[in-house]
Amino acid sequence: MAVVRSLRGIGARVINAVWRIGFGSRFFLMTLVYSGTSFRRFRLIVREMFSSGVMSLIIILVAGMFVGMVLGLQGYETLKRYGSESALGTLVALSLVRELGPVLAALLFASRAGSAMTAEIGLMKATEQLSAMEMMAVNPIARVVAPRFWAGVISLPLLTAMFSSMGVFGGYVVGVVLIGVDEGSFWSQMQAAVDFQHDVMNGVIKSFVFGVAVTVIALFEGYDAPPTAEGVSGATTRTVVESSLAILILDFILTAFMFRGD
Amino acid sequence: MSSEVLVEIRDVNFAYDSRPILKGINMAFPKGKLIAIMGLSGCGKTTILRHIGGVLKPTKGCVKVDGQVIHDLDQDGLYKMRRKMGMLFQFGALFTDMTVFDNVAFQMREHTDLPEEIIRDLVMMKLHAVGLYGTQDLMPAELSGGMARRVALARTIALDPMLIMYDEPFAGLDPISLTVVGQLIRRLNDALGATSIVVTHDVQESLKIVDYIYFVSDGAIIAEGTADDIRASGEAFVHQFVYGEMDGPIPFHYPDGDFSKDLGVRV
Ligand SMILES: Nc1ncnc2c1ncn2[C@@H]1O[C@H](COP(=O)(O)OP(=O)(O)OP(=O)(O)O)[C@@H](O)[C@H]1O
Ligand SMILES: [Mg+2]
Image (cartoon, rainbow over all chains, first blue to last red):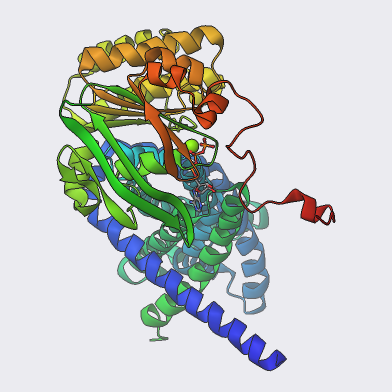
């Protein structure tokens, strides 16, 4: 009996998950369909970019700096064994631009801005603000959801660029200023090794995809949250968990397509 | 009740899941009138308003607004209809990320191309009407409950709707604001030529201002009439409600709850 019951439990969970994916996709589609207002009134997007993007700036810059400094230390340690300390610039830049920048910036963005979006939308729903808007003949998806979506999608690649730049700077401070790697070879090797198309553009594509994933998850969880205090807090937690997993899984898939070892 | 009817509710039944909430409601709201729906907490008053707003769909029966069956409209039709309606939500539902000014201006900005100066004048007029001129730069969190409700009222009437629904406009108001808001609702109704529906528990205040009253109990209409009819009514439940008596035909308790069972009392 216990077996049947646990099987039934698993089945119910799977069905529930499929339902939610369906609702989520529909929600995403509706967001795209009702995006017209946001672009006609770009002010709406700018306002949300301030609250999700600019507010994440400090954490992104500080984290980027420290990640770059760690890369500088660890990279130097390893490269020294092979006598190729001059490649430190390349190592720092490539790790940041291809992987660490997009992934870490997206993870930070999910926990800083994504959770805030979920909580905000969830509370707007719980306090009937969304119903009130609908009674005023204003579509909440067009007026509330879509501007936040585009703000997130635009902000994250910009934040990622800043994260990576700070990281390179951190690597420079540790590698060149503190340890004393040759400054000329640090920069020139970096310049020679980092390819715009292959490395930078792929990083930008990654952060764009992560931006879509994180904001859709955050907005959907908020929109779908039960209109109670527990409902909203549960949804906020789910946003962070689901978007972190989504980022890491998507990163593997994208990496597999972009850098197949050739 | 002769003149033209703006909202008509015919034999409406509604259930949440399988729990029936409305059971065969019939109501008519003639143009230009101010009508109250009264009843105990949980009897389905807000649910009736949601039907008129097209948020809920009756399981049986139909709701007609301005000659159209509201639950058969597509989204465009529904939104067009809602532009002509205003609804004051029971808990205000002010947009917490906007100032008082932006809240009141919201619909003007969404639905009209009015220049900012005119919007500004209109907003100030509406705020003045609810006695809150000077609060325009505050955020909703900085308002008291009663003030928030009056701001919500100003927002509801921002575009001079033809049908105004008030869900508990009197809750949480001090006696002076209560009279002011009551008079305001009456005046708005007459000045705009609007039709108003007021959901309320406040019998004394509403008897002063309304044209017609429906009493709802347990999802059905148990009495109706003009203010004078109601005051003079000899019917026991109307009397009980109007004078707030504990004992009478209207049960105070939620239907299933027999507290004595929980106490282990055997009857
Ligand atoms: N979303 C919902 N799901 C299930 N039941 C609900 C829901 N909303 C309301 N109800 C039930 O419907 C009944 C009527 O609710 P409604 O909000 O219409 O009451 P009301 O007359 O407005 O009460 P009050 O005067 O307290 O505002 C209540 O018994 C409530 O439990
Ligand atoms: Mg109610």
